[in-house]
Length: 412
Figure 1 (cartoon, rainbow, N blue to C red):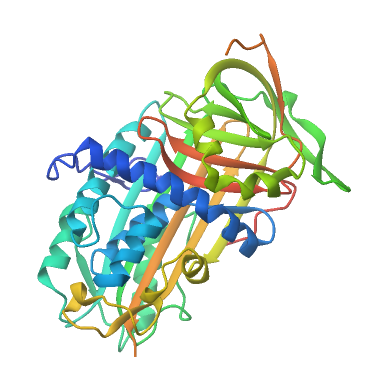
Figure 2 (cartoon, helix red, strand yellow; figure 1 turned 90 degrees about the vertical axis):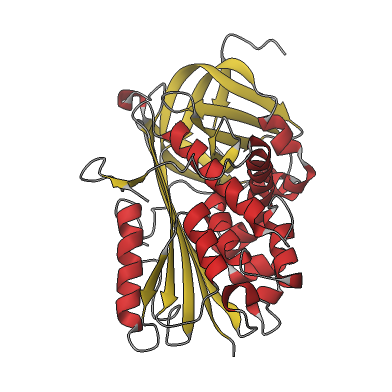
């Protein structure tokens, strides 16, 4: 990938890979739809693991795991395709790979306009001298933009960790300085697949800081906290209602990307909303937004989270990949590899000017051993979900669950 410096504090911008083997719009759209379904499936288990506010990038997770899936065979591959909602079949990973190349390019094109920034990048680190299959490495290089970089995990895992974390930090503008640790990478590691994503966007209609003030936020039926809450009359935004919830879509400059806030309004609150995420109601609402003028009250918030994704993915049906039953023979021609860890870290800051978000995912593979009113109030004063989406493709880049916006973001 050709890197271009955007600013001293911005990550490198990868050149769009629009010229990569066409990648039809059909398969890219299928990938975006599959990613949206995967994102909603992930929210409940990630929320349970977080035990509070939660934030992650389903697109980063899907991208990193798809690179692993490209080297899987048999049941191991089929489980990846089912869980991630990848296009094509597990017997032909090139269909999904080309779809990612196409969709990555579309997201970069949409995101890097009107002063916004979106950086997407993949990297592959392999054990020096290990017999990787040439076809697998070629697919990673061509469609995922990730040529093999060699490390000596066996004799110097500390240097590998330093190199990988340095790359992630560069690609996320320093938002994620340390993704992997000695607990994740050791002398048994043979391959490490990494995805990084960085987003910085300014609201199309900014919130006046002079109107930001302390306001109550109902953490639950019996607890209330005070949070700094932004206020603005935001014209011409997407709005929809569903069974027990309402959605407001706040666009960033240029209108190609937006934050969707899904606010429960019925009995049971956020837990009841998340229980119906697999029923299609939320996606249906996102697909039926109508233009409205909204009087928005939205808390300022920051979330930082590191997630061990192995139990989450096992719960969603991807099981063999983490056991000796794993078949990654497409990577080295043998049956001696499995995934030892999947580490994900994500951060988000939302304030009066806009949003900054970053995420990175590492997959570590080792030997196994209708008309609307003039102004509609939309007061976010109780727990809610939110997404940051690329609107033309419908791809959910980030997803969040906010129980208490007054909680300070923990350091990664």
